[in-house]
Image (cartoon, rainbow, N blue to C red; front, side, top):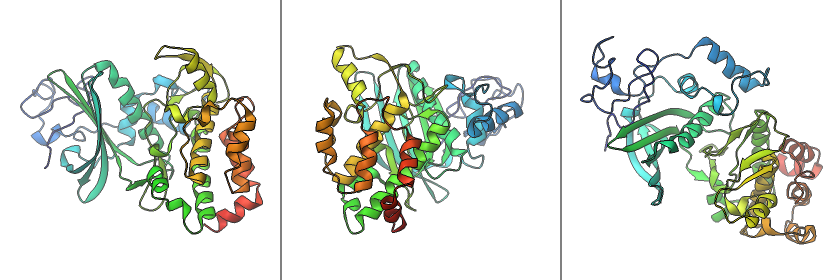
Length: 380
C-alpha cells in the first residue's frame, strides 16, 4: 500500500521552513494558501521546499565534525540546530511520499505513556530503506525523537561505516496524535541475531570475533572523538549491513558532552542488564524511577561494550554480571573467555572502578599493540 503525504515537516515560518499540512486539502498556512507563492500539490511531500541551511550553520557543522574549535562551537548538547542540520544531511531527491511500505518488522507499545514505536521495511524507487515511526499523544515526548534524528543526520555527514545512512525525517499531527518518522539505511541483520544464530561461533570464530571487536571499538573511538556518548550499547542496537559493516543505531538518549573525560550529573538511562556497576549500585539505593547521579558517561559506555564483547565470546546471557561487587568474581567470569587478547582487554573494560576503567581509545590502542589480536584480525 502506498501512503501519500503521510509525514510532513514542522513549520516554523513561511520563509525558511516548509508546511506541516498533512494533505492538499488542509491548507493551513499562508504559504500554501498562496499568499506568498503558488505550490502544486506535489509540494506537500517533505522534500518539495528543500532549503539550504545558512552558510554559518554549515561552517559550525564542519567544525563540530572535525572537532575544530570545539570549545567555541555552538554545536553542543541541545543547541544543535536540528532543522538546518536535517536540511544539510537529508537527500534532496528522496520523497517520503514515494515510500511503499512492505513489511512491519517491529512494534512496541507503551500503553501507560500512549507511545508506539514501529519499524518498517519500505522501498523508494527500488531502493530498500528502513522507516522508524513513533506515534504519541504528549508533545513533550517529541524531544527524544528529534534528538535521534539529529544524531543520525550529523553522523551521516561523516560517511563513516559505523553509522547508518540517513535519508529523511518527517512529522505530522492529527486529532491530538503526533507521528514522527526517520528514514534510514536498511540493514538485514543485527549483532544480536548473529549471536542467537551462533554465526560468530562457527569456523574461524577467532577471526570473526576479532573483526567485530575491531569494527565496534574503532566506531566508538570515532564517536567519542566528537564528544558523543550513546548510553544504550547492546547487541540489539548494532545492526549488520548487507556488506557486513556493523552500524550503531538508537540515539534517543545519547548526549553531546563538553568534555568526554569529565564526570557530571545525569539521569541514569539505558538497558538494565548492560548498565555499568556504578549505575546499578545507585539504582539499588533509590526507589525512584528517575535517578540522577554524577558519573562519567564514556566509562559507563565502555563497560556496556565490554559486556557485549563478553556475550559475543561466550554466547551466554549477561544478566547479573553488572551486579558483581567483588573483582575476584569478575575474574571467574572472564576466565570463560578463551581468547587471551579479549580476556586481557576486558579485564580493563569491565573494572568496577570507573576511574581505572579503560576509555574507548585506550582499549583500542591496547589491542592494536597485541600480536595475538592482530594475527586473528589479519585472518578475518
